[in-house]
Image 1 (cartoon, rainbow, N blue to C red):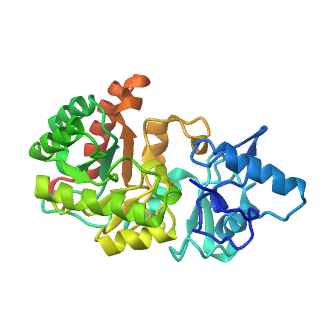
Image 2: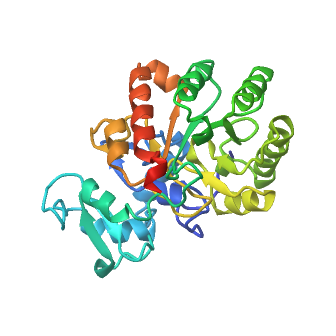
Length: 321
């Protein structure tokens, strides 16, 4: 990608580039995205150059700057326990960060508050709404598919696979025939905010039409490769016909910016807590992972345990209705 030849912050606003609100802290001597991905060397160099010139750089979003005022709070306002603290927005508006609208709660108390509305809809067998998604092509996707189908959770599961290869397309067709949902993951796993918008439109539009043709499903979900997108990408995706977009964030901002718990990677936000334990404490209802990470880190047994927990948590008895 050709970088704009302008100072880091000049003329840029939230949404112009993910770095403008994602790079804003330093881990040792290394700048990094909040989701753990490395920052391109060009951006590190640009950042250092502008800092050396004493240019005022404020890449953090207004929302994060507001919340940073309360980062030292470590006690739950309900049960008074110390440890991991969630911020609860009383009016459910994530951008209203006045102190009067915030409650600081442990994961357990936060879950209790959200229990009445957290899972927004039920189907005819009494299932609370939640979902699982698996990103990227990998041969072991089929092993995971068999495991998920054994628990009768194929209707809860979306596979998001790029389509730039015969083997990938054949796997998508097989998964669809097994009863799994399919999401778009662009044509070639393109980082949508780092390519010209016309190229991004093609990367989003072609797989939607192609996948609908070969699976017979309506492709409603777009999973942004590596979680990279911007406002222009979102608007184009909506025009193409996508209803939902999944990011790598740990919160939901809108239907096109739905977050999820990353189960197969130890993210810095988990603060050393096992990803599966973190997910079970979280108020989020979308869980995702990569098959290659499951294989690399030997997580197959943990995935099996998670599926048992998932079904117990989200499937209610018919009598409960």
